[in-house]
Amino acid sequence: MRILLALLLLPLSVFGAAKPPPNIVLIFCDDLAYQAISAYGDSRKLLNTPGMDRIAKEGMRFDRCLVTNSICGPSRACVLTGKYSHANGFYNNSNSKFDGSQTTFPKLLQKAGYSTAIIGKWHLMTDPTGFDYWNVLPGQGVYYNPATIDNGKNVKHTGYVTDIIGDLSLDWLKSRDKNKPFLLMCQHKAPHREWEPPARNLGFDNDRVYDEPPTLFDTYEGRSKAVIDQDMRIEKTMTDRDTKLVTPGQLNEEQRKYWDDYYGPRNAKFRAANLSGKDLIKWRYQRYMHDYLACVKAVDENVTRVLEYLDKEGLSDNTAVFLSSDQGFYLGEHGWFDKRWIFEESVRTPMLVRWPGVTKPGSSSDKIVSLIDLANTFLDIAGQPAIPDAHGKSFVPILKGETPADWRKSLYYHYYEFPVPHHVRPHYGVVTDQYKLIHYYTPDLDEWELLDRKKDPLETKSFYNDPAYADTVKELKAELSRLQAEVKETIPPPRTAFGNKAFENEAQPPGQPAAGKGKGRNKKGV
Ligand code: SGN
Ligand code: CA
Image 1: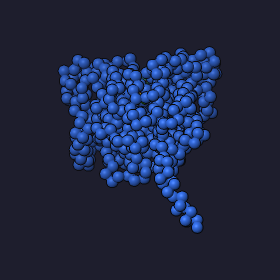
Image 2: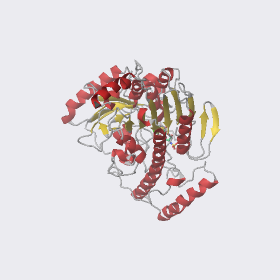
Image 3: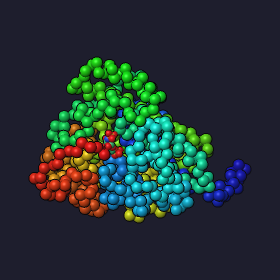
Image 4: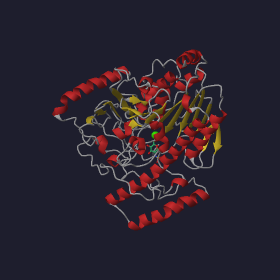
Protein backbone atom coordinates (compact mmCIF):
# COMPACT_ATOMS: atom_id res chain seq x y z
CA MET A 1 0.00 0.00 0.00
CA ARG A 2 2.77 2.36 1.01
CA ILE A 3 4.63 1.53 -2.24
CA LEU A 4 1.50 2.20 -4.26
CA LEU A 5 1.08 5.57 -2.59
CA ALA A 6 4.69 6.41 -3.27
CA LEU A 7 4.28 5.48 -6.95
CA LEU A 8 1.18 7.64 -7.20
CA LEU A 9 3.02 10.59 -5.68
CA LEU A 10 6.16 10.14 -7.81
CA PRO A 11 4.93 11.95 -10.93
CA LEU A 12 4.14 15.00 -8.82
CA SER A 13 7.73 15.39 -7.74
CA VAL A 14 9.23 14.42 -11.10
CA PHE A 15 6.98 16.45 -13.35
CA GLY A 16 5.93 19.12 -10.85
CA ALA A 17 7.14 22.72 -11.04
CA ALA A 18 10.74 22.72 -12.24
CA LYS A 19 13.23 23.56 -9.51
CA PRO A 20 14.49 27.10 -10.07
CA PRO A 21 18.14 27.38 -11.13
CA PRO A 22 20.52 27.44 -8.17
CA ASN A 23 21.62 30.73 -6.67
CA ILE A 24 25.35 31.31 -6.59
CA VAL A 25 27.28 33.05 -3.81
CA LEU A 26 31.00 33.63 -4.22
CA ILE A 27 32.75 34.86 -1.10
CA PHE A 28 36.07 36.01 -2.46
CA CYS A 29 38.84 37.19 -0.16
CA ASP A 30 42.01 39.13 -0.80
CA ASP A 31 45.28 37.38 0.07
CA LEU A 32 43.63 34.65 2.15
CA ALA A 33 46.17 31.88 2.84
CA TYR A 34 44.80 28.34 3.03
CA GLN A 35 47.17 27.95 6.00
CA ALA A 36 44.85 30.28 7.96
CA ILE A 37 41.70 28.17 7.47
CA SER A 38 41.27 25.40 10.03
CA ALA A 39 39.54 23.14 7.48
CA TYR A 40 42.91 22.95 5.68
CA GLY A 41 44.62 21.63 8.81
CA ASP A 42 47.92 23.58 8.84
CA SER A 43 50.29 22.06 11.39
CA ARG A 44 50.68 25.44 13.14
CA LYS A 45 46.93 25.41 13.89
CA LEU A 46 46.90 29.12 13.36
CA LEU A 47 43.21 29.91 13.63
CA ASN A 48 39.82 28.39 14.21
CA THR A 49 37.49 29.33 11.33
CA PRO A 50 34.06 27.82 12.06
CA GLY A 51 32.31 29.77 9.29
CA MET A 52 34.61 28.64 6.49
CA ASP A 53 34.88 25.18 7.98
CA ARG A 54 31.12 24.88 7.82
CA ILE A 55 31.29 25.22 4.02
CA ALA A 56 33.92 22.45 3.94
CA LYS A 57 31.99 20.26 6.35
CA GLU A 58 28.80 20.59 4.32
CA GLY A 59 30.56 20.50 0.96
CA MET A 60 33.89 19.92 -0.76
CA ARG A 61 37.40 21.15 0.06
CA PHE A 62 39.72 21.57 -2.91
CA ASP A 63 43.31 20.90 -1.95
CA ARG A 64 44.88 22.01 -5.18
CA CYS A 65 43.06 25.08 -6.46
CA LEU A 66 45.76 27.03 -8.31
CA VAL A 67 45.88 30.52 -9.73
CA THR A 68 47.43 31.40 -13.07
CA ASN A 69 48.96 34.82 -12.21
CA SER A 70 49.24 35.32 -8.46
CA ILE A 71 48.13 38.92 -7.90
CA CYS A 72 44.87 40.70 -7.34
CA GLY A 73 43.53 42.43 -10.45
CA PRO A 74 44.80 39.73 -12.81
CA SER A 75 43.19 36.96 -10.76
CA ARG A 76 39.89 38.80 -10.67
CA ALA A 77 39.99 39.23 -14.46
CA CYS A 78 40.67 35.48 -14.77
CA VAL A 79 37.63 34.73 -12.61
CA LEU A 80 35.31 36.95 -14.64
CA THR A 81 36.45 35.77 -18.08
CA GLY A 82 37.68 32.21 -17.50
CA LYS A 83 40.78 33.21 -19.48
CA TYR A 84 44.49 33.70 -18.86
CA SER A 85 45.85 37.24 -18.47
CA HIS A 86 47.30 37.37 -22.00
CA ALA A 87 43.80 36.67 -23.37
CA ASN A 88 41.76 38.94 -21.08
CA GLY A 89 44.34 41.75 -21.32
CA PHE A 90 44.74 42.33 -17.56
CA TYR A 91 48.35 41.41 -16.78
CA ASN A 92 49.26 43.44 -13.70
CA ASN A 93 48.03 45.83 -11.00
CA SER A 94 50.20 48.68 -12.27
CA ASN A 95 48.88 49.76 -15.66
CA SER A 96 46.25 47.24 -16.78
CA LYS A 97 42.64 48.33 -17.24
CA PHE A 98 39.90 45.72 -17.51
CA ASP A 99 38.07 45.78 -20.83
CA GLY A 100 34.52 45.48 -19.53
CA SER A 101 33.13 44.96 -23.02
CA GLN A 102 34.45 41.39 -23.17
CA THR A 103 32.40 38.31 -22.35
CA THR A 104 32.18 37.57 -18.62
CA PHE A 105 30.11 35.04 -16.70
CA PRO A 106 28.08 37.68 -14.75
CA LYS A 107 26.93 39.16 -18.07
CA LEU A 108 25.84 35.73 -19.27
CA LEU A 109 24.06 34.92 -16.01
CA GLN A 110 22.34 38.30 -16.13
CA LYS A 111 21.17 37.54 -19.66
CA ALA A 112 19.92 34.15 -18.47
CA GLY A 113 17.66 35.85 -15.93
CA TYR A 114 19.85 36.05 -12.83
CA SER A 115 19.98 39.08 -10.55
CA THR A 116 23.68 39.86 -10.29
CA ALA A 117 25.58 41.83 -7.66
CA ILE A 118 29.19 42.51 -6.71
CA ILE A 119 30.08 44.08 -3.38
CA GLY A 120 33.54 44.92 -2.01
CA LYS A 121 36.96 44.67 -3.61
CA TRP A 122 37.03 45.03 -7.37
CA HIS A 123 40.45 46.50 -8.34
CA LEU A 124 40.00 46.29 -12.10
CA MET A 125 40.26 50.04 -12.82
CA THR A 126 37.17 50.35 -15.03
CA ASP A 127 33.56 50.25 -13.80
CA PRO A 128 32.01 46.79 -13.32
CA THR A 129 29.80 45.52 -16.14
CA GLY A 130 27.26 42.69 -16.04
CA PHE A 131 25.92 43.54 -12.58
CA ASP A 132 22.45 44.79 -11.65
CA TYR A 133 24.02 46.14 -8.50
CA TRP A 134 27.64 47.02 -7.82
CA ASN A 135 29.09 48.69 -4.78
CA VAL A 136 32.85 48.45 -4.75
CA LEU A 137 35.90 49.82 -2.97
CA PRO A 138 37.97 52.27 -4.99
CA GLY A 139 41.32 50.59 -5.75
CA GLN A 140 42.59 48.66 -2.73
CA GLY A 141 40.11 50.31 -0.37
CA VAL A 142 40.90 50.96 3.30
CA TYR A 143 40.10 48.97 6.45
CA TYR A 144 38.56 51.73 8.55
CA ASN A 145 35.76 54.09 7.50
CA PRO A 146 36.07 53.18 3.81
CA ALA A 147 34.49 54.89 0.85
CA THR A 148 32.70 52.74 -1.71
CA ILE A 149 31.44 53.46 -5.20
CA ASP A 150 27.78 52.53 -5.21
CA ASN A 151 26.72 52.10 -8.85
CA GLY A 152 28.90 55.09 -9.76
CA LYS A 153 28.20 57.24 -6.69
CA ASN A 154 30.79 57.82 -3.93
CA VAL A 155 29.56 56.84 -0.49
CA LYS A 156 31.44 57.23 2.80
CA HIS A 157 30.97 54.61 5.51
CA THR A 158 31.84 54.53 9.20
CA GLY A 159 33.10 51.27 10.61
CA TYR A 160 35.19 48.28 9.66
CA VAL A 161 35.46 47.26 6.03
CA THR A 162 34.77 43.52 6.42
CA ASP A 163 31.61 44.19 8.44
CA ILE A 164 30.52 46.84 5.96
CA ILE A 165 30.93 44.45 3.02
CA GLY A 166 28.99 41.86 5.05
CA ASP A 167 26.22 44.39 5.80
CA LEU A 168 25.96 45.55 2.18
CA SER A 169 25.81 41.94 1.00
CA LEU A 170 22.98 41.10 3.39
CA ASP A 171 21.17 44.34 2.48
CA TRP A 172 21.31 43.38 -1.17
CA LEU A 173 20.12 39.84 -0.48
CA LYS A 174 17.15 41.25 1.44
CA SER A 175 16.17 43.76 -1.22
CA ARG A 176 16.91 41.68 -4.34
CA ASP A 177 14.26 40.73 -6.89
CA LYS A 178 12.94 37.56 -5.27
CA ASN A 179 11.47 36.24 -8.54
CA LYS A 180 14.91 35.65 -9.96
CA PRO A 181 17.83 33.38 -9.10
CA PHE A 182 20.82 35.40 -7.97
CA LEU A 183 24.57 35.70 -8.22
CA LEU A 184 26.21 37.46 -5.28
CA MET A 185 29.94 38.14 -5.36
CA CYS A 186 30.87 39.23 -1.85
CA GLN A 187 34.48 40.33 -2.16
CA HIS A 188 36.39 41.11 1.00
CA LYS A 189 39.35 43.43 1.21
CA ALA A 190 40.70 41.45 4.14
CA PRO A 191 43.15 40.04 4.95
CA HIS A 192 45.23 42.23 2.58
CA ARG A 193 48.26 44.17 3.78
CA GLU A 194 48.49 46.13 6.13
CA TRP A 195 46.38 43.59 8.05
CA GLU A 196 44.41 46.01 10.22
CA PRO A 197 42.09 44.08 12.57
CA PRO A 198 38.71 45.20 13.90
CA ALA A 199 38.53 46.37 17.53
CA ARG A 200 36.70 43.27 18.70
CA ASN A 201 39.48 40.98 17.51
CA LEU A 202 42.46 42.87 18.92
CA GLY A 203 44.05 40.50 21.42
CA PHE A 204 41.74 37.63 20.40
CA ASP A 205 44.69 35.24 20.73
CA ASN A 206 45.66 36.29 24.29
CA ASP A 207 49.21 37.07 23.18
CA ARG A 208 49.71 33.53 21.96
CA VAL A 209 53.17 32.64 20.67
CA TYR A 210 52.70 31.11 17.22
CA ASP A 211 54.87 28.30 15.94
CA GLU A 212 57.30 29.52 13.32
CA PRO A 213 57.38 27.93 9.89
CA PRO A 214 60.52 25.81 9.42
CA THR A 215 61.71 28.06 6.59
CA LEU A 216 61.36 31.42 8.41
CA PHE A 217 65.13 31.86 8.13
CA ASP A 218 65.54 30.43 4.62
CA THR A 219 68.88 31.45 3.10
CA TYR A 220 67.81 30.66 -0.51
CA GLU A 221 71.02 28.73 -0.98
CA GLY A 222 71.32 27.23 -4.45
CA ARG A 223 68.20 29.03 -5.65
CA SER A 224 67.75 31.25 -8.69
CA LYS A 225 68.83 34.88 -8.51
CA ALA A 226 65.13 35.68 -8.85
CA VAL A 227 64.40 34.01 -5.51
CA ILE A 228 67.32 35.66 -3.75
CA ASP A 229 66.63 39.10 -5.16
CA GLN A 230 62.96 39.59 -4.16
CA ASP A 231 61.70 42.36 -1.89
CA MET A 232 59.08 40.64 0.23
CA ARG A 233 60.89 39.58 3.34
CA ILE A 234 59.69 40.05 6.88
CA GLU A 235 63.27 41.05 7.64
CA LYS A 236 63.80 43.63 4.92
CA THR A 237 60.46 44.69 3.51
CA MET A 238 58.00 44.73 6.41
CA THR A 239 57.42 48.31 7.55
CA ASP A 240 56.51 49.97 10.86
CA ARG A 241 53.07 50.53 9.39
CA ASP A 242 52.75 46.78 8.74
CA THR A 243 53.75 45.99 12.32
CA LYS A 244 51.50 48.70 13.82
CA LEU A 245 54.38 50.71 15.24
CA VAL A 246 52.66 53.48 13.30
CA THR A 247 48.92 53.99 13.83
CA PRO A 248 46.81 54.02 10.63
CA GLY A 249 45.72 57.49 9.56
CA GLN A 250 42.07 56.79 8.82
CA LEU A 251 40.94 55.92 12.37
CA ASN A 252 38.44 58.18 14.13
CA GLU A 253 38.91 59.18 17.75
CA GLU A 254 37.05 56.21 19.21
CA GLN A 255 38.80 53.72 16.97
CA ARG A 256 42.18 55.25 17.75
CA LYS A 257 41.50 54.82 21.46
CA TYR A 258 40.96 51.06 21.36
CA TRP A 259 43.77 50.72 18.84
CA ASP A 260 46.23 52.52 21.08
CA ASP A 261 44.98 50.69 24.17
CA TYR A 262 45.93 47.40 22.56
CA TYR A 263 49.09 48.28 20.63
CA GLY A 264 50.43 51.08 22.88
CA PRO A 265 51.75 49.00 25.81
CA ARG A 266 52.93 46.19 23.53
CA ASN A 267 54.82 48.62 21.30
CA ALA A 268 56.42 50.25 24.35
CA LYS A 269 57.63 46.83 25.49
CA PHE A 270 58.96 46.11 22.02
CA ARG A 271 60.86 49.41 21.86
CA ALA A 272 62.37 48.88 25.29
CA ALA A 273 63.64 45.45 24.21
CA ASN A 274 65.63 47.01 21.34
CA LEU A 275 65.55 43.84 19.25
CA SER A 276 67.68 43.17 16.20
CA GLY A 277 68.64 40.35 13.84
CA LYS A 278 66.70 37.12 14.24
CA ASP A 279 64.91 38.36 17.36
CA LEU A 280 63.44 41.24 15.40
CA ILE A 281 62.25 38.89 12.66
CA LYS A 282 60.68 36.64 15.29
CA TRP A 283 58.88 39.58 16.89
CA ARG A 284 57.61 40.81 13.53
CA TYR A 285 56.38 37.33 12.65
CA GLN A 286 54.36 37.15 15.88
CA ARG A 287 52.86 40.59 15.34
CA TYR A 288 52.09 39.70 11.71
CA MET A 289 50.29 36.50 12.73
CA HIS A 290 48.17 38.28 15.33
CA ASP A 291 47.11 41.01 12.91
CA TYR A 292 46.62 38.84 9.84
CA LEU A 293 44.63 36.19 11.71
CA ALA A 294 42.50 38.77 13.51
CA CYS A 295 41.51 40.06 10.05
CA VAL A 296 40.73 36.52 8.83
CA LYS A 297 38.63 35.95 11.94
CA ALA A 298 36.47 38.94 10.96
CA VAL A 299 36.03 37.50 7.46
CA ASP A 300 35.05 34.20 9.02
CA GLU A 301 32.47 35.91 11.24
CA ASN A 302 30.98 37.48 8.14
CA VAL A 303 30.94 34.15 6.30
CA THR A 304 28.82 32.82 9.16
CA ARG A 305 26.42 35.77 8.85
CA VAL A 306 25.84 35.04 5.15
CA LEU A 307 25.34 31.30 5.75
CA GLU A 308 22.90 32.01 8.57
CA TYR A 309 20.94 34.41 6.41
CA LEU A 310 20.63 31.74 3.70
CA ASP A 311 19.40 29.28 6.34
CA LYS A 312 16.89 31.69 7.78
CA GLU A 313 15.43 32.49 4.37
CA GLY A 314 15.25 28.84 3.34
CA LEU A 315 17.77 29.52 0.56
CA SER A 316 20.60 27.21 1.62
CA ASP A 317 19.30 24.14 -0.19
CA ASN A 318 19.24 25.78 -3.59
CA THR A 319 22.35 27.93 -3.31
CA ALA A 320 25.88 26.96 -4.31
CA VAL A 321 28.30 28.75 -1.97
CA PHE A 322 31.94 29.16 -2.98
CA LEU A 323 34.71 30.55 -0.78
CA SER A 324 38.03 31.41 -2.35
CA SER A 325 40.73 34.07 -2.64
CA ASP A 326 42.52 35.91 -5.44
CA GLN A 327 45.67 33.99 -4.52
CA GLY A 328 47.43 32.33 -1.63
CA PHE A 329 49.79 34.17 0.72
CA TYR A 330 53.02 33.62 2.61
CA LEU A 331 52.66 33.45 6.36
CA GLY A 332 56.38 33.58 7.09
CA GLU A 333 57.40 30.61 4.93
CA HIS A 334 60.81 31.39 3.34
CA GLY A 335 60.85 34.51 5.52
CA TRP A 336 58.16 36.05 3.32
CA PHE A 337 54.82 37.75 3.19
CA ASP A 338 53.02 38.55 -0.14
CA LYS A 339 52.55 36.16 -3.08
CA ARG A 340 53.30 36.43 -6.87
CA TRP A 341 55.37 33.25 -7.18
CA ILE A 342 54.45 29.98 -8.83
CA PHE A 343 55.53 28.39 -5.52
CA GLU A 344 52.98 26.55 -3.40
CA GLU A 345 51.79 29.03 -0.76
CA SER A 346 51.35 31.65 -3.45
CA VAL A 347 49.97 29.65 -6.38
CA ARG A 348 47.55 27.61 -4.29
CA THR A 349 44.42 29.36 -3.11
CA PRO A 350 41.60 28.17 -0.85
CA MET A 351 38.49 26.75 -2.54
CA LEU A 352 35.58 25.50 -0.48
CA VAL A 353 32.25 24.70 -2.13
CA ARG A 354 28.89 23.81 -0.65
CA TRP A 355 26.16 22.74 -3.05
CA PRO A 356 23.53 20.83 -1.14
CA GLY A 357 22.10 17.77 -2.84
CA VAL A 358 24.95 17.71 -5.35
CA THR A 359 28.26 17.85 -3.50
CA LYS A 360 28.91 15.23 -0.87
CA PRO A 361 29.31 16.80 2.59
CA GLY A 362 32.79 16.52 4.05
CA SER A 363 34.39 15.53 0.73
CA SER A 364 37.68 16.75 -0.73
CA SER A 365 39.47 16.71 -4.06
CA ASP A 366 43.16 16.89 -4.86
CA LYS A 367 42.54 17.50 -8.58
CA ILE A 368 44.09 20.62 -10.06
CA VAL A 369 41.33 23.17 -10.46
CA SER A 370 41.90 26.86 -11.03
CA LEU A 371 40.27 30.26 -10.69
CA ILE A 372 40.00 30.28 -14.51
CA ASP A 373 37.53 27.38 -14.08
CA LEU A 374 35.05 29.42 -12.07
CA ALA A 375 33.32 31.17 -14.99
CA ASN A 376 32.36 27.96 -16.76
CA THR A 377 31.61 26.24 -13.46
CA PHE A 378 29.08 28.93 -12.54
CA LEU A 379 27.52 28.84 -16.00
CA ASP A 380 27.26 25.06 -15.76
CA ILE A 381 25.55 25.30 -12.37
CA ALA A 382 23.06 27.71 -13.91
CA GLY A 383 22.44 25.32 -16.82
CA GLN A 384 23.95 27.78 -19.29
CA PRO A 385 26.38 27.08 -22.15
CA ALA A 386 30.09 27.53 -21.43
CA ILE A 387 32.14 30.48 -22.70
CA PRO A 388 33.51 28.66 -25.75
CA ASP A 389 36.94 30.29 -25.92
CA ALA A 390 37.59 30.28 -22.16
CA HIS A 391 40.68 28.37 -21.03
CA GLY A 392 39.00 27.18 -17.83
CA LYS A 393 36.64 24.22 -17.59
CA SER A 394 33.60 23.57 -15.46
CA PHE A 395 34.47 21.48 -12.43
CA VAL A 396 30.82 20.61 -11.79
CA PRO A 397 31.65 16.91 -12.54
CA ILE A 398 34.16 16.98 -9.67
CA LEU A 399 31.54 18.58 -7.42
CA LYS A 400 29.24 15.72 -8.34
CA GLY A 401 31.92 13.20 -7.37
CA GLU A 402 32.48 12.17 -11.00
CA THR A 403 35.95 13.40 -11.91
CA PRO A 404 36.48 12.89 -15.66
CA ALA A 405 39.34 10.52 -16.48
CA ASP A 406 40.90 13.18 -18.71
CA TRP A 407 40.83 15.98 -16.10
CA ARG A 408 43.96 18.18 -16.36
CA LYS A 409 47.18 16.89 -14.84
CA SER A 410 49.13 20.12 -15.26
CA LEU A 411 48.51 23.86 -15.28
CA TYR A 412 50.29 26.69 -17.06
CA TYR A 413 51.31 29.72 -14.97
CA HIS A 414 52.62 33.17 -15.90
CA TYR A 415 53.42 36.12 -13.62
CA TYR A 416 54.44 39.45 -15.17
CA GLU A 417 54.51 42.47 -12.81
CA PHE A 418 58.01 43.89 -12.26
CA PRO A 419 59.91 45.51 -10.60
CA VAL A 420 57.45 47.04 -8.10
CA PRO A 421 56.09 46.14 -5.76
CA HIS A 422 58.22 43.34 -4.27
CA HIS A 423 60.69 42.86 -7.12
CA VAL A 424 59.54 39.38 -8.10
CA ARG A 425 60.85 38.65 -11.57
CA PRO A 426 58.41 37.67 -14.29
CA HIS A 427 58.31 33.93 -14.77
CA TYR A 428 56.26 31.26 -16.44
CA GLY A 429 56.07 27.58 -15.79
CA VAL A 430 54.10 24.39 -15.46
CA VAL A 431 52.68 22.92 -12.26
CA THR A 432 51.84 19.23 -11.83
CA ASP A 433 50.94 17.21 -8.73
CA GLN A 434 54.59 16.69 -7.99
CA TYR A 435 56.65 19.23 -9.93
CA LYS A 436 57.02 22.84 -10.88
CA LEU A 437 59.23 23.78 -13.80
CA ILE A 438 59.92 27.52 -13.92
CA HIS A 439 61.62 29.86 -16.37
CA TYR A 440 62.82 33.33 -15.30
CA TYR A 441 63.42 35.22 -18.46
CA THR A 442 64.10 38.94 -17.92
CA PRO A 443 66.91 40.73 -19.79
CA ASP A 444 69.29 40.26 -16.88
CA LEU A 445 68.29 36.69 -16.14
CA ASP A 446 67.76 33.44 -17.98
CA GLU A 447 67.38 30.76 -15.35
CA TRP A 448 65.29 27.67 -14.79
CA GLU A 449 64.23 25.96 -11.58
CA LEU A 450 62.67 22.57 -10.95
CA LEU A 451 60.84 21.96 -7.66
CA ASP A 452 59.86 18.52 -6.45
CA ARG A 453 57.06 18.68 -3.87
CA LYS A 454 57.42 15.01 -2.99
CA LYS A 455 61.11 15.10 -2.27
CA ASP A 456 61.20 18.64 -0.91
CA PRO A 457 57.72 19.66 0.30
CA LEU A 458 58.98 22.94 1.74
CA GLU A 459 60.35 23.98 -1.66
CA THR A 460 63.82 24.95 -0.58
CA LYS A 461 65.82 23.44 -3.46
CA SER A 462 65.94 23.44 -7.22
CA PHE A 463 66.66 20.10 -8.89
CA TYR A 464 67.01 21.61 -12.36
CA ASN A 465 70.73 20.87 -12.65
CA ASP A 466 70.57 17.47 -10.99
CA PRO A 467 71.37 14.85 -13.68
CA ALA A 468 68.89 12.45 -12.04
CA TYR A 469 66.12 14.83 -13.14
CA ALA A 470 67.21 15.21 -16.77
CA ASP A 471 64.30 13.17 -18.15
CA THR A 472 61.79 14.94 -15.92
CA VAL A 473 63.06 18.31 -17.12
CA LYS A 474 62.74 17.20 -20.73
CA GLU A 475 59.20 15.95 -20.23
CA LEU A 476 58.14 19.07 -18.37
CA LYS A 477 59.64 21.34 -21.02
CA ALA A 478 57.59 19.51 -23.63
CA GLU A 479 54.49 19.88 -21.45
CA LEU A 480 55.19 23.59 -20.98
CA SER A 481 55.43 24.12 -24.74
CA ARG A 482 52.25 22.13 -25.26
CA LEU A 483 50.40 24.29 -22.73
CA GLN A 484 51.76 27.55 -24.17
CA ALA A 485 50.52 26.46 -27.59
CA GLU A 486 47.18 25.38 -26.16
CA VAL A 487 46.52 28.74 -24.49
CA LYS A 488 48.14 30.55 -27.43
CA GLU A 489 50.53 32.68 -25.44
CA THR A 490 53.31 34.28 -27.42
CA ILE A 491 56.64 34.44 -25.59
CA PRO A 492 57.99 37.03 -24.93
CA PRO A 493 54.84 38.87 -23.89
CA PRO A 494 54.33 42.55 -24.80
CA ARG A 495 56.27 45.08 -22.70
CA THR A 496 53.03 46.53 -21.33
CA ALA A 497 52.53 43.23 -19.50
CA PHE A 498 55.22 44.15 -17.00
CA GLY A 499 53.36 47.19 -15.85
CA ASN A 500 56.10 49.71 -15.30
CA LYS A 501 59.38 50.97 -16.57
CA ALA A 502 61.30 47.84 -15.73
CA PHE A 503 62.81 47.20 -19.13
CA GLU A 504 62.58 50.64 -20.70
CA ASN A 505 66.24 51.07 -21.48
CA GLU A 506 67.10 47.50 -22.18
CA ALA A 507 68.56 46.69 -25.57
CA GLN A 508 66.90 43.29 -25.58
CA PRO A 509 63.19 42.67 -25.05
CA PRO A 510 62.17 40.45 -22.15
CA GLY A 511 62.24 36.83 -23.14
CA GLN A 512 65.60 37.11 -24.82
CA PRO A 513 68.47 36.21 -22.53
CA ALA A 514 70.88 39.11 -22.69
CA ALA A 515 73.81 40.77 -21.08
CA GLY A 516 71.77 43.90 -20.21
CA LYS A 517 71.45 44.94 -16.57
CA GLY A 518 68.13 45.21 -14.66
CA LYS A 519 67.04 48.72 -13.72
CA GLY A 520 67.25 49.89 -10.15
CA ARG A 521 64.12 49.18 -8.23
CA ASN A 522 61.48 51.79 -7.83
CA LYS A 523 60.52 52.20 -4.18
CA LYS A 524 57.07 53.51 -4.98
CA GLY A 525 54.77 50.53 -4.43
CA VAL A 526 51.54 50.02 -6.35
C1 SGN B 1 50.01 46.90 -2.28
C2 SGN B 1 50.80 46.26 -1.14
C3 SGN B 1 51.69 45.17 -1.68
C4 SGN B 1 50.87 44.19 -2.48
C5 SGN B 1 50.12 44.92 -3.58
C6 SGN B 1 49.26 44.06 -4.45
N1 SGN B 1 51.59 47.25 -0.45
O1 SGN B 1 50.89 47.56 -3.13
O2 SGN B 1 52.34 44.53 -0.59
O3 SGN B 1 51.67 43.20 -3.05
O4 SGN B 1 49.29 45.90 -2.98
O5 SGN B 1 48.33 43.33 -3.70
S1 SGN B 1 50.86 48.19 0.67
O6 SGN B 1 51.92 48.71 1.52
O7 SGN B 1 50.18 49.25 -0.06
O8 SGN B 1 49.91 47.36 1.39
S2 SGN B 1 47.10 42.78 -4.46
O9 SGN B 1 46.40 41.86 -3.56
O10 SGN B 1 46.27 43.91 -4.80
O11 SGN B 1 47.61 42.08 -5.64
CA1 CA C 1 45.33 39.82 -3.41
